[in-house]
Image (tube, rainbow, N blue to C red; front, top):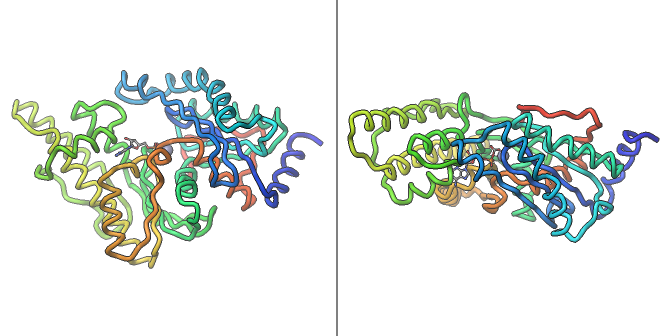
Length: 352
Ligand code: KG4
Ligand code: ZN
C-alpha cells in the first residue's frame, strides 16, 4: 500500500478509536505553535513561540520575516511540545495543520513540516481551516459545549457571525464588508503610537480613559448582520491627525476608550439581535479580539439580560495557538472531512 492508502485506512479507523492523539501545527501568522491534543478536548501540550518582539520593531507583521522565523523555530517547538506532553512521535495518531487563511509563506512552513511528519510517521494528514480552529478553542475551555450555537468570530483576519449547526457544519450569517475588527484595533493603535499588536494595548489604555470623544462617525449597515469598520477607522485616524496638525492637546486614553466602546457596541448589538431574531440561545465567541476585556464584559451583561448562555475561550486560547487546531481536527476526523494528501498546499483565504 502507498502512503495515501495507508493514511485513508488509518483515518477511517480513528473514527472509532477510543483515544485519538493529534499533533497539530499552526503557523498562519506570527506564532509558531505545535500542540498535542487528545480527543479534541484534552490538551497535553501547547507550545506557542511568539514573534511579537521581532515584528514590534516594524510596527506590524513582516511576512518574509515571519516565514524565516517559523523555519528557525519549528523544530524546537516540536521537541518541546512532545516533551511537555510526555509523548513521542510514535504515539501520534494523526498530524493536523492550518492550511489557510493566513500569510502564504508562513503557512507553507507549517504545511510542509506537517506533510513531512505525516509521511514519515505514515499517519493521516488533516488540513484545518484556521477559522474553524478559533471555534475549536471553545471545546477546550468548555468541556461540555456542543453545537448547535451562534458564533461571533472576531480576529485579525475575520469578523463574522456564524451559525454552527454541527461540529463541521457552518453557515455564514453576516461578515465584514471591509476591514476586520482586529485590523481596525491595530490601525487605531498605530495612529495613537501604541506598539504592535495594537488590540491588547488599546484594551489597556482604554481603562484609563472616558467615553467622551466625538468622532465624525455614524454606525453603518444598521439593518444588516454585516459589519463595516473602515468608516470608524478613518474617523479615528482623521480625528488624531487633525489634533496633531493643529497642535491641540487630546487624551489618547479617551480616544482609545471611545473607539473601544463604539466597536464593542457594534459587535454586541448585532450579535444580540442575531441571537434574538434567529432564536439562538447559545453564543460562542472566537478569535483574538475575543480577548478584549470590554467585549467580554458587555457580552456577559447582554447575554444575562437576554437569557443567552455565553461561552468564551480562556484568554490563552483566544489568540493563535495549535491546540485549537488539534481540537477541531478531531471533529473533522469524526465527521470524515479534512483528510489531505501530500499535494496539500497553503491558501491565503478560506471560506467559512
Ligand atoms: O485570532 P488572532 O490571534 O489572529 C488572527 O487569526 O487574525 O487575532 C489577532 C488580532 C489582532 O488584531 C490583535 O490586535 C487582536 O486580535 N487582539 C485584541 C486583543 N487581543 C488580541 N483586540 C482587542 N483587545 C484585545 N485584548
Ligand atoms: Zn487567528
